[in-house]
Amino acid sequence: MQYRRLGRAGLRVSALSLGSWVTYHNQVDVKSAAEMLAAAFDAGVNFFDNAEAYAGGRSEEIMGAALKQLGWPRLNYVVSSKYFWGLDRQGESINRRDTLNRKYLMQAVDGSLKRFGLDHIDLIYCHRPDPHTPVEETARAMNDLIVQGKALYWGTSEWSAADIRAAWDIADRHGWHKPVVEQPQYHLFHRQRVEQEYARLYDDIGLGLTTWSPLASGLLTGKYAAGVPEGSRGALESMAFLREGLTDQKKNAAVAQLAPIADELGGTLAQLALAWVASNPRVSSVIMGASRVDQLQANLGALALLDKLTPELKARIDAIAAPLAA
Image 1 (cartoon, rainbow, N blue to C red):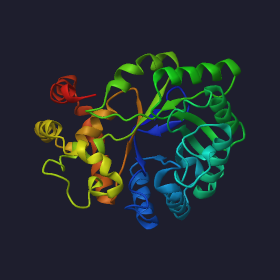
Image 2: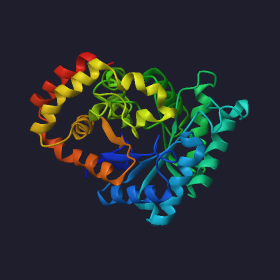
Image 3: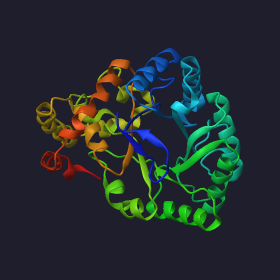
């Protein structure tokens, strides 16, 4: 396993990490979660990503129960969570959904700590920007959570470069803990934000990245070429909004063109896609999803392809995928 600093922070995270979106509670129970966490940990993975909104808080409960079962020393792993949407969009107070105000953030982190069964969360994210709350209020709340020992680092997810820079500048001016990481979507067909919009932030403020959806929700595995297979992520009713993208004919045709390159490297399409994301030196960690141990172990094989991704090979990959990328 490779380990990389989280931007300019001293914290080091595994180049490949394991997330819980979609899978926990929907496809993965505590027993399965413990098995996959253990398999990932044995392979050197030390970073496990979650969010308050995943499965309405049940994802945090499952991960927390699995971590308790495994009994690892707390210093040996990194856990994250994210905040914005709340737990129940229909029944919650106006101050506990679609917001990053101080009242919500302070109480939301307390809820996560209880569900995880932990005394602190290593990394907390603002899951989306909140145009209705002053960024100064949000930055101060995140700083205070760190000062109180409830979190160690904070960052953003799917924020614009301008909003990230504004939060960083406010925190810097007040001497508060600054955001150290952004969690954007990043894969062969979704690249503009990471490769262009954030470009100046890497050197200017030392922004790190923990990227999500490296397989484009499974599109880059090739399994959606003939439609949506039963039992796949795209077949889940809660993921119905993904289906149009997963069955995109042009993108599936491009994926088929990538298959011979994966074969040349002695890997799978999924491994190639994961290795491609990890090959970007700006990426601190690539968050993988998995619903089975064998699937996880196969994806971990992407590490073996990293050194094989020469500039020439990446140019061939770009010639196929870049024209369809946003």
